[in-house]
Amino acid sequence: MQAKFTLALIYGSAREGRFCDTVVDWLLTHLPNMLAADILIVDPADLIAESRIVRAEAENRIARNLARADAFLIVTPEYNHGYTAALKELIDSFYRPWWGKPIAFVSYGGISGGLRAIEQLRQVFAELGAATIRETVSFTHAVERFDENGNLRDPGRTLRQLERLAKQLSWWAVTLKAGRETVVLEEIA
Image 1: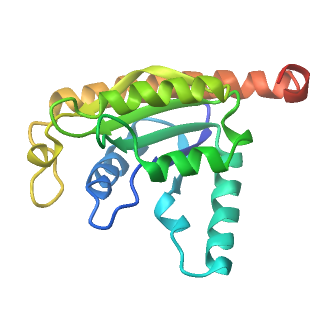
Image 2 (image 1 turned 120 degrees about the vertical axis):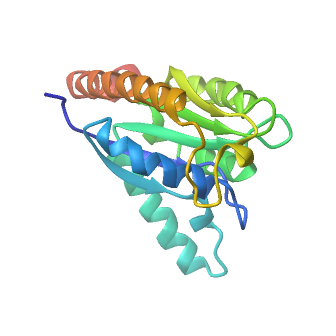
């Protein structure tokens, strides 16, 4: 029996008409069968608000979800060989919740499939005390990989990669959760 944990699935794009929605929807179709987790959605687009009140409400909701999470799965595009400004703002706005928690990545883009964005994110999260897991899922030429209904063409290998990612993330989530419950954060941070 798998131990249950809380996973924050984080959108890496806030652009209007973003492709991130297609990738996240595909993940949400498959992830619940691969891991024993409550999945929370964290979307940096929520921080784009015309009023301070609406933005403050979004910040509070995001802060609560990040704090509740035992693990993170970031779905990121690659823009200009890096990750997005919206994702940078989200990460930098919430310092504490990343510490001692595992982070997995699903990326998409052109020829590199977003892998350059992931490599930059690994450096950032190392500085924040998070543990990035090795396994990733990457969609090269992502727009061509999905049909008009958001279904992945030839999903076999990608589903196997996602299953490996889910198993590795589950192990790290449960293991680090036990560690955080055993050692008080202030003692080592």
